[in-house]
Length: 503
Image (tube, rainbow, N blue to C red; front, top):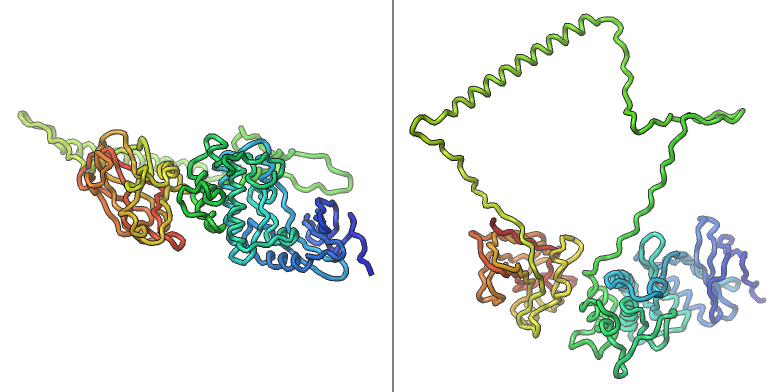
């Protein structure tokens, strides 16, 4: 017996009413439907009779329903029977990544923030052994509520019959393609996606984002290359999992949820016509904002003479107290003494605290004296002096506390622009643990010529380093000789640094 036809208006499970056919391909149809029990829109996949991949789709949907990351589409139900088989999931409304970049590349930090959210959500899915394998700009949505949603984890791969011998690497490359598209407005794939033009090529390879679009930060170009363009990695380790990709973008400021509009306040009329036969609800009269409200003061009923006598006594007592205070103050001033002839007044003792002022650096860079350019992650350096607790500079991640014995240290270099008498350096290292850090000051970038004004064997939290006496120098270095822990690896991190100099 054949299954009844699925048409708009069909009700599934006596609850889900199909309304609009959104998409249809190879025997699977996506609908916008209404959950009549909860009165909300939902997305429903239905399947033609004999749809060959139905068991795989239902299995993937049930696995996806156990995911808890709110950035992944929630799956509510998955049913396979002889009547109607279907998958019910969250209906997501908003602007897709494809819509955002249809007119050209996004602001680099905005593009990176959206893809970073997708990478973290996808890393969560991979922990549950679910992959995407079909990442396109249409799968990433900035919702009407101001959040990120990643659509189709698990289910779309089953629908398209996509498999992979290395799903983690494939999804890392998919994230790289999304970031490339956001940075350039081009799609680095075999086929154009969502109307985007194909990425330009050079010598048979895709051009890097910086070769396509001016103004792409170097670190985002590097992350894209590490995930997607092996010929442009410049010897850096590839990003082979969504977790690696998320970690590489961990310092990017995230998109803030859009503020919810406040409801308009309408003045309540002082009176309204009453409907005959109906009792009007009590209304508080509106009060003009310019007229201050006064509490009702009852007029005294008797006892007026007694009140006047009490008030007179209070006034007299206040006058006496003021007179005594003035006389006592005058004697105290007189007893300090006026210098006699031939004497000079003793100056007031000077304050023991040394007055300081905050000095802003003229330039900030990541500092690695052993590298070819002497820098490390300099593209993040300004994050350490922007006054924001949500942004940071951090080094590369290493496999050991001693940099794998590849170098003696790494740090953040502040060029103050001129010699300043440095008295105090405050640093917020964030939530890592362990590590050893020094604060060095000098006239040159030669570490051996610098003076160490402070040291800590726990580079975590907020630390203040104070010099016994002001140390003059143009350069200040936050120098890690051992690295704090970070997500199973080791890296130096500075969320904020401030330099105080004597006046």
